[in-house]
Length: 436
Image (tube, rainbow, N blue to C red):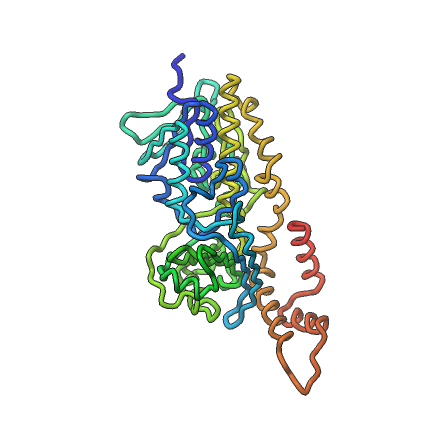
Protein backbone atom coordinates (compact mmCIF):
# COMPACT_ATOMS: atom_id res chain seq x y z
CA UNK A 1 0.00 0.00 0.00
CA UNK A 2 1.41 3.42 -0.99
CA UNK A 3 2.22 5.69 1.91
CA UNK A 4 0.21 8.96 2.02
CA UNK A 5 2.03 12.11 1.01
CA UNK A 6 1.07 13.80 4.30
CA UNK A 7 -0.24 12.81 7.69
CA UNK A 8 -2.76 15.68 7.58
CA UNK A 9 -4.13 17.83 4.77
CA UNK A 10 -5.98 20.95 5.92
CA UNK A 11 -8.24 22.65 3.36
CA UNK A 12 -8.61 26.39 3.89
CA UNK A 13 -6.02 28.75 5.41
CA UNK A 14 -8.49 30.82 7.44
CA UNK A 15 -8.30 30.93 11.24
CA UNK A 16 -9.63 27.37 11.66
CA UNK A 17 -7.37 25.88 9.01
CA UNK A 18 -4.22 27.63 10.13
CA UNK A 19 -4.90 26.74 13.77
CA UNK A 20 -5.40 23.09 12.76
CA UNK A 21 -2.21 23.04 10.69
CA UNK A 22 -0.27 24.72 13.50
CA UNK A 23 -1.46 22.26 16.14
CA UNK A 24 -0.83 19.18 13.97
CA UNK A 25 2.61 20.37 12.85
CA UNK A 26 3.63 21.13 16.43
CA UNK A 27 2.71 17.56 17.30
CA UNK A 28 5.30 16.38 14.78
CA UNK A 29 3.00 15.42 11.93
CA UNK A 30 3.59 16.21 8.25
CA UNK A 31 0.97 18.77 7.22
CA UNK A 32 -0.17 20.44 4.00
CA UNK A 33 -2.25 23.62 4.32
CA UNK A 34 -4.23 24.37 1.13
CA UNK A 35 -5.42 27.87 0.26
CA UNK A 36 -7.40 28.66 -2.90
CA UNK A 37 -6.27 32.30 -2.98
CA UNK A 38 -2.81 33.61 -3.87
CA UNK A 39 -2.15 34.10 -0.16
CA UNK A 40 -4.02 33.49 3.11
CA UNK A 41 -6.70 36.12 3.68
CA UNK A 42 -6.88 37.21 0.05
CA UNK A 43 -10.49 36.04 -0.37
CA UNK A 44 -11.88 36.91 3.05
CA UNK A 45 -13.94 39.82 4.34
CA UNK A 46 -13.64 40.61 8.01
CA UNK A 47 -14.55 43.65 10.02
CA UNK A 48 -14.66 42.29 13.49
CA UNK A 49 -12.96 41.53 16.73
CA UNK A 50 -10.65 38.72 17.82
CA UNK A 51 -10.96 37.70 21.47
CA UNK A 52 -7.71 36.32 22.70
CA UNK A 53 -8.38 33.75 25.39
CA UNK A 54 -8.19 30.80 22.98
CA UNK A 55 -4.96 32.26 21.61
CA UNK A 56 -3.49 32.10 25.13
CA UNK A 57 -3.35 28.34 24.64
CA UNK A 58 -2.55 28.27 20.93
CA UNK A 59 -0.01 31.12 20.77
CA UNK A 60 1.18 32.13 24.25
CA UNK A 61 1.99 35.84 24.38
CA UNK A 62 0.08 36.34 21.12
CA UNK A 63 -0.45 40.05 21.76
CA UNK A 64 3.24 40.73 21.29
CA UNK A 65 3.21 39.56 17.65
CA UNK A 66 -0.36 39.50 16.32
CA UNK A 67 -1.02 42.24 13.73
CA UNK A 68 -3.47 44.21 15.88
CA UNK A 69 -5.18 47.35 14.66
CA UNK A 70 -6.72 48.48 17.97
CA UNK A 71 -7.45 47.01 21.39
CA UNK A 72 -11.19 47.08 22.06
CA UNK A 73 -11.78 49.14 25.19
CA UNK A 74 -15.37 50.10 24.26
CA UNK A 75 -18.19 47.68 23.44
CA UNK A 76 -21.49 49.25 22.46
CA UNK A 77 -24.88 47.98 21.35
CA UNK A 78 -27.17 50.38 19.45
CA UNK A 79 -30.87 49.83 18.77
CA UNK A 80 -32.36 52.14 16.14
CA UNK A 81 -35.40 53.14 14.14
CA UNK A 82 -35.36 55.52 11.18
CA UNK A 83 -35.03 58.61 13.42
CA UNK A 84 -34.10 57.21 16.85
CA UNK A 85 -31.23 55.39 18.50
CA UNK A 86 -30.55 54.02 21.97
CA UNK A 87 -27.02 52.90 22.84
CA UNK A 88 -25.59 50.92 25.74
CA UNK A 89 -21.89 51.78 25.96
CA UNK A 90 -19.39 49.83 28.08
CA UNK A 91 -15.82 51.03 28.49
CA UNK A 92 -12.97 49.41 30.40
CA UNK A 93 -9.36 50.53 30.25
CA UNK A 94 -8.39 47.15 31.71
CA UNK A 95 -9.26 45.73 28.28
CA UNK A 96 -6.44 47.82 26.82
CA UNK A 97 -3.71 46.11 28.87
CA UNK A 98 -2.25 42.58 28.77
CA UNK A 99 -3.64 39.97 28.60
CA UNK A 100 -6.22 42.07 26.67
CA UNK A 101 -9.87 41.22 26.01
CA UNK A 102 -10.28 41.80 22.28
CA UNK A 103 -8.66 43.43 19.29
CA UNK A 104 -9.68 44.58 15.85
CA UNK A 105 -7.58 43.07 13.09
CA UNK A 106 -7.64 43.13 9.31
CA UNK A 107 -8.37 39.63 8.05
CA UNK A 108 -5.62 39.61 5.43
CA UNK A 109 -3.06 40.43 8.12
CA UNK A 110 -4.50 38.00 10.68
CA UNK A 111 -4.71 35.06 8.28
CA UNK A 112 -1.20 35.63 6.95
CA UNK A 113 0.17 35.75 10.49
CA UNK A 114 -1.55 32.52 11.56
CA UNK A 115 -0.53 30.67 8.39
CA UNK A 116 3.02 31.90 8.91
CA UNK A 117 3.05 30.35 12.38
CA UNK A 118 1.89 27.06 10.90
CA UNK A 119 4.70 27.22 8.32
CA UNK A 120 7.24 27.95 11.05
CA UNK A 121 6.01 24.83 12.84
CA UNK A 122 6.67 22.75 9.70
CA UNK A 123 3.42 22.85 7.71
CA UNK A 124 3.67 23.22 3.93
CA UNK A 125 1.51 26.08 2.64
CA UNK A 126 0.10 25.40 -0.83
CA UNK A 127 -1.58 28.49 -2.31
CA UNK A 128 -3.66 29.10 -5.47
CA UNK A 129 -4.97 25.55 -5.11
CA UNK A 130 -8.59 24.42 -5.00
CA UNK A 131 -9.62 21.14 -3.40
CA UNK A 132 -12.17 19.87 -5.90
CA UNK A 133 -13.22 16.69 -4.10
CA UNK A 134 -12.33 13.87 -1.74
CA UNK A 135 -10.23 10.78 -2.32
CA UNK A 136 -11.54 7.56 -0.75
CA UNK A 137 -10.39 3.99 -0.27
CA UNK A 138 -12.39 0.85 -0.97
CA UNK A 139 -14.17 1.15 2.41
CA UNK A 140 -15.22 4.74 1.69
CA UNK A 141 -12.81 6.32 4.18
CA UNK A 142 -11.34 9.67 3.15
CA UNK A 143 -7.71 9.37 2.07
CA UNK A 144 -6.95 12.84 0.70
CA UNK A 145 -8.25 15.51 -1.68
CA UNK A 146 -8.41 16.04 -5.40
CA UNK A 147 -7.02 19.40 -6.54
CA UNK A 148 -7.00 21.57 -9.62
CA UNK A 149 -3.22 21.48 -9.72
CA UNK A 150 -1.59 19.91 -12.81
CA UNK A 151 0.56 17.74 -10.56
CA UNK A 152 -2.52 16.07 -9.14
CA UNK A 153 -4.02 14.99 -5.86
CA UNK A 154 -2.83 15.09 -2.26
CA UNK A 155 -3.12 11.95 -0.16
CA UNK A 156 -3.28 12.02 3.63
CA UNK A 157 -4.22 9.97 6.65
CA UNK A 158 -6.61 12.72 7.78
CA UNK A 159 -8.32 15.59 5.95
CA UNK A 160 -9.48 18.58 8.01
CA UNK A 161 -12.17 20.52 6.13
CA UNK A 162 -11.99 24.23 6.91
CA UNK A 163 -13.30 25.31 3.52
CA UNK A 164 -15.89 27.79 4.74
CA UNK A 165 -19.65 28.11 4.80
CA UNK A 166 -21.58 25.45 2.86
CA UNK A 167 -18.46 23.24 2.90
CA UNK A 168 -18.63 21.06 -0.20
CA UNK A 169 -16.07 18.66 1.32
CA UNK A 170 -18.26 18.07 4.39
CA UNK A 171 -21.27 17.63 2.09
CA UNK A 172 -19.41 15.19 -0.15
CA UNK A 173 -18.45 13.23 2.96
CA UNK A 174 -22.16 12.99 3.88
CA UNK A 175 -21.74 14.95 7.10
CA UNK A 176 -24.49 17.49 6.28
CA UNK A 177 -27.09 14.81 5.53
CA UNK A 178 -30.66 16.07 6.03
CA UNK A 179 -29.67 19.63 6.93
CA UNK A 180 -30.98 22.64 5.01
CA UNK A 181 -27.89 24.84 5.03
CA UNK A 182 -29.29 27.50 2.68
CA UNK A 183 -32.05 28.39 5.17
CA UNK A 184 -29.42 29.12 7.82
CA UNK A 185 -27.01 31.25 5.81
CA UNK A 186 -26.46 35.00 6.06
CA UNK A 187 -24.77 37.48 3.77
CA UNK A 188 -22.34 39.95 5.29
CA UNK A 189 -21.45 43.07 3.31
CA UNK A 190 -18.78 45.45 4.51
CA UNK A 191 -17.05 48.65 3.56
CA UNK A 192 -13.64 49.69 4.79
CA UNK A 193 -13.62 53.48 5.10
CA UNK A 194 -10.39 55.43 5.45
CA UNK A 195 -10.20 58.15 8.11
CA UNK A 196 -7.10 59.77 9.62
CA UNK A 197 -6.07 58.21 12.89
CA UNK A 198 -6.46 61.46 14.83
CA UNK A 199 -10.00 61.94 13.47
CA UNK A 200 -11.00 58.44 14.61
CA UNK A 201 -9.60 59.02 18.09
CA UNK A 202 -11.36 62.37 18.49
CA UNK A 203 -14.65 61.26 16.93
CA UNK A 204 -14.94 58.05 18.95
CA UNK A 205 -13.41 59.38 22.19
CA UNK A 206 -10.42 57.03 21.94
CA UNK A 207 -6.75 57.44 22.66
CA UNK A 208 -3.63 55.61 21.57
CA UNK A 209 -4.52 52.08 20.43
CA UNK A 210 -7.96 52.02 22.10
CA UNK A 211 -10.79 50.84 19.85
CA UNK A 212 -14.58 50.52 19.59
CA UNK A 213 -16.81 47.55 18.75
CA UNK A 214 -20.34 48.81 17.91
CA UNK A 215 -23.13 46.34 17.13
CA UNK A 216 -26.46 47.59 15.76
CA UNK A 217 -30.03 46.25 15.68
CA UNK A 218 -32.87 47.79 13.69
CA UNK A 219 -30.87 48.88 10.65
CA UNK A 220 -32.02 46.23 8.16
CA UNK A 221 -35.62 47.34 7.39
CA UNK A 222 -37.04 44.40 9.29
CA UNK A 223 -35.01 41.84 7.34
CA UNK A 224 -33.51 39.42 9.89
CA UNK A 225 -30.02 40.72 10.61
CA UNK A 226 -28.04 43.59 12.08
CA UNK A 227 -25.13 45.91 11.55
CA UNK A 228 -21.68 46.70 12.90
CA UNK A 229 -19.03 49.38 13.03
CA UNK A 230 -15.47 48.76 14.22
CA UNK A 231 -12.51 51.09 14.48
CA UNK A 232 -9.19 50.13 12.94
CA UNK A 233 -6.02 52.19 13.24
CA UNK A 234 -6.80 54.57 10.36
CA UNK A 235 -10.03 53.12 8.94
CA UNK A 236 -13.52 52.01 9.92
CA UNK A 237 -15.21 48.70 9.12
CA UNK A 238 -18.94 49.24 8.58
CA UNK A 239 -21.39 46.61 7.45
CA UNK A 240 -24.61 44.64 7.73
CA UNK A 241 -25.32 40.92 8.09
CA UNK A 242 -28.71 39.68 6.83
CA UNK A 243 -30.36 36.30 6.31
CA UNK A 244 -30.29 35.20 2.68
CA UNK A 245 -33.93 34.12 2.59
CA UNK A 246 -35.19 37.34 4.16
CA UNK A 247 -33.04 39.39 1.83
CA UNK A 248 -34.30 37.53 -1.24
CA UNK A 249 -37.93 37.86 -0.13
CA UNK A 250 -37.55 41.61 0.48
CA UNK A 251 -36.24 42.50 -2.97
CA UNK A 252 -33.79 44.91 -1.30
CA UNK A 253 -30.14 44.93 -2.34
CA UNK A 254 -27.59 44.62 0.49
CA UNK A 255 -25.72 47.77 -0.58
CA UNK A 256 -28.98 49.71 -0.06
CA UNK A 257 -29.10 48.53 3.54
CA UNK A 258 -25.48 49.52 4.07
CA UNK A 259 -26.06 52.96 2.51
CA UNK A 260 -29.09 53.43 4.77
CA UNK A 261 -27.05 52.53 7.84
CA UNK A 262 -24.32 55.02 6.96
CA UNK A 263 -26.95 57.74 6.39
CA UNK A 264 -28.71 57.21 9.74
CA UNK A 265 -28.55 60.29 12.02
CA UNK A 266 -26.74 58.27 14.70
CA UNK A 267 -24.13 56.85 12.29
CA UNK A 268 -23.60 59.51 9.62
CA UNK A 269 -21.58 61.81 11.93
CA UNK A 270 -19.30 58.87 12.71
CA UNK A 271 -18.47 58.09 9.06
CA UNK A 272 -18.64 61.63 7.66
CA UNK A 273 -15.76 62.48 5.34
CA UNK A 274 -14.47 58.89 5.19
CA UNK A 275 -13.10 57.55 1.89
CA UNK A 276 -14.19 54.15 0.58
CA UNK A 277 -11.22 51.77 0.37
CA UNK A 278 -12.94 48.39 -0.08
CA UNK A 279 -16.36 46.82 -0.54
CA UNK A 280 -16.73 43.09 0.00
CA UNK A 281 -19.30 40.40 0.69
CA UNK A 282 -19.14 37.03 2.40
CA UNK A 283 -21.54 34.21 3.29
CA UNK A 284 -21.86 33.22 6.94
CA UNK A 285 -23.53 30.32 8.74
CA UNK A 286 -26.17 31.70 11.11
CA UNK A 287 -27.99 28.82 12.77
CA UNK A 288 -25.47 27.87 15.45
CA UNK A 289 -25.56 24.59 17.34
CA UNK A 290 -28.67 23.07 15.80
CA UNK A 291 -27.43 23.46 12.21
CA UNK A 292 -23.98 21.92 12.64
CA UNK A 293 -23.06 18.87 10.56
CA UNK A 294 -21.54 15.72 11.95
CA UNK A 295 -18.03 16.81 12.87
CA UNK A 296 -16.21 13.49 12.44
CA UNK A 297 -16.09 10.91 9.67
CA UNK A 298 -13.72 8.18 8.57
CA UNK A 299 -10.53 10.09 7.80
CA UNK A 300 -12.13 13.56 7.99
CA UNK A 301 -12.81 16.31 10.54
CA UNK A 302 -14.73 19.56 10.03
CA UNK A 303 -14.04 22.90 11.78
CA UNK A 304 -14.86 26.61 11.67
CA UNK A 305 -17.47 28.03 9.28
CA UNK A 306 -17.45 24.69 7.44
CA UNK A 307 -18.98 23.22 10.61
CA UNK A 308 -21.41 26.17 11.09
CA UNK A 309 -19.41 27.28 14.13
CA UNK A 310 -20.49 30.89 13.91
CA UNK A 311 -23.05 32.83 15.89
CA UNK A 312 -24.34 35.38 13.39
CA UNK A 313 -27.30 36.68 15.37
CA UNK A 314 -28.06 40.19 14.17
CA UNK A 315 -26.14 42.47 16.50
CA UNK A 316 -23.79 39.70 17.54
CA UNK A 317 -21.35 38.08 15.17
CA UNK A 318 -18.76 35.73 16.56
CA UNK A 319 -16.94 33.12 14.55
CA UNK A 320 -13.17 33.65 14.58
CA UNK A 321 -12.79 32.50 18.18
CA UNK A 322 -14.82 29.35 17.58
CA UNK A 323 -12.77 28.72 14.41
CA UNK A 324 -9.48 29.08 16.26
CA UNK A 325 -10.57 26.77 19.06
CA UNK A 326 -12.09 24.12 16.79
CA UNK A 327 -9.10 24.22 14.45
CA UNK A 328 -6.68 23.76 17.34
CA UNK A 329 -8.58 20.74 18.67
CA UNK A 330 -8.99 19.27 15.19
CA UNK A 331 -5.23 19.47 14.63
CA UNK A 332 -4.53 17.85 17.98
CA UNK A 333 -7.09 15.10 17.46
CA UNK A 334 -5.80 14.35 13.96
CA UNK A 335 -2.19 14.21 15.17
CA UNK A 336 -3.10 11.86 18.04
CA UNK A 337 -5.13 9.59 15.74
CA UNK A 338 -2.23 9.34 13.29
CA UNK A 339 0.05 8.46 16.19
CA UNK A 340 -2.30 5.66 17.29
CA UNK A 341 -2.62 4.39 13.73
CA UNK A 342 -6.41 4.75 13.82
CA UNK A 343 -7.88 7.53 11.70
CA UNK A 344 -11.35 5.97 11.47
CA UNK A 345 -14.42 7.77 12.78
CA UNK A 346 -13.83 6.06 16.13
CA UNK A 347 -10.15 6.98 16.17
CA UNK A 348 -10.96 10.64 15.47
CA UNK A 349 -13.88 10.78 17.95
CA UNK A 350 -11.81 12.52 20.67
CA UNK A 351 -12.17 15.70 18.57
CA UNK A 352 -15.86 15.86 19.45
CA UNK A 353 -15.09 15.30 23.13
CA UNK A 354 -12.46 18.06 23.09
CA UNK A 355 -15.02 20.47 21.63
CA UNK A 356 -17.65 19.48 24.18
CA UNK A 357 -15.21 20.05 27.04
CA UNK A 358 -14.24 23.49 25.66
CA UNK A 359 -16.05 26.76 25.03
CA UNK A 360 -16.62 25.83 21.38
CA UNK A 361 -19.57 23.48 21.82
CA UNK A 362 -20.37 24.51 25.40
CA UNK A 363 -21.11 28.09 24.28
CA UNK A 364 -22.96 26.98 21.16
CA UNK A 365 -25.13 24.66 23.22
CA UNK A 366 -25.83 27.33 25.82
CA UNK A 367 -26.69 29.92 23.15
CA UNK A 368 -28.60 27.60 20.81
CA UNK A 369 -31.82 29.62 21.24
CA UNK A 370 -30.19 33.00 20.54
CA UNK A 371 -30.31 32.92 16.70
CA UNK A 372 -34.02 32.14 16.78
CA UNK A 373 -34.65 34.91 19.32
CA UNK A 374 -32.62 37.58 17.55
CA UNK A 375 -33.95 36.74 14.08
CA UNK A 376 -37.58 36.59 15.29
CA UNK A 377 -40.23 38.98 13.93
CA UNK A 378 -40.62 40.68 17.31
CA UNK A 379 -36.91 41.33 17.77
CA UNK A 380 -36.38 42.54 14.22
CA UNK A 381 -39.54 44.59 13.62
CA UNK A 382 -41.08 45.50 16.97
CA UNK A 383 -38.50 45.67 19.72
CA UNK A 384 -36.27 48.38 18.16
CA UNK A 385 -39.19 50.83 18.01
CA UNK A 386 -40.44 49.74 21.43
CA UNK A 387 -37.07 50.28 23.10
CA UNK A 388 -36.46 53.62 21.37
CA UNK A 389 -39.95 54.90 22.21
CA UNK A 390 -39.61 53.66 25.79
CA UNK A 391 -36.32 55.52 26.22
CA UNK A 392 -37.67 58.63 24.51
CA UNK A 393 -40.78 58.58 26.68
CA UNK A 394 -38.74 58.16 29.84
CA UNK A 395 -36.63 61.22 29.09
CA UNK A 396 -39.43 63.27 27.51
CA UNK A 397 -40.39 66.31 29.64
CA UNK A 398 -44.16 66.94 29.47
CA UNK A 399 -44.58 69.58 32.19
CA UNK A 400 -47.03 70.57 33.52
CA UNK A 401 -48.35 67.01 33.05
CA UNK A 402 -46.85 64.58 35.58
CA UNK A 403 -44.36 62.01 34.28
CA UNK A 404 -45.94 58.55 33.87
CA UNK A 405 -44.50 55.69 35.90
CA UNK A 406 -42.15 53.30 34.14
CA UNK A 407 -44.64 50.43 34.35
CA UNK A 408 -47.40 52.48 32.76
CA UNK A 409 -45.00 53.76 30.12
CA UNK A 410 -43.89 50.21 29.32
CA UNK A 411 -47.46 48.94 28.98
CA UNK A 412 -48.42 51.88 26.79
CA UNK A 413 -45.36 51.56 24.56
CA UNK A 414 -45.63 47.78 24.23
CA UNK A 415 -49.28 48.09 23.24
CA UNK A 416 -48.44 50.74 20.63
CA UNK A 417 -46.00 48.31 19.00
CA UNK A 418 -48.29 45.28 19.17
CA UNK A 419 -46.18 43.49 21.81
CA UNK A 420 -47.87 41.60 24.61
CA UNK A 421 -46.10 41.80 27.95
CA UNK A 422 -46.15 38.02 28.30
CA UNK A 423 -44.23 37.72 25.00
CA UNK A 424 -41.79 40.38 26.15
CA UNK A 425 -41.21 38.54 29.41
CA UNK A 426 -40.86 35.20 27.59
CA UNK A 427 -38.22 36.62 25.24
CA UNK A 428 -36.42 38.28 28.15
CA UNK A 429 -36.39 34.96 30.01
CA UNK A 430 -34.98 33.18 26.95
CA UNK A 431 -32.21 35.77 26.74
CA UNK A 432 -31.53 35.50 30.48
CA UNK A 433 -31.29 31.71 30.33
CA UNK A 434 -28.93 31.92 27.37
CA UNK A 435 -26.59 34.57 28.74
CA UNK A 436 -27.21 34.17 32.45
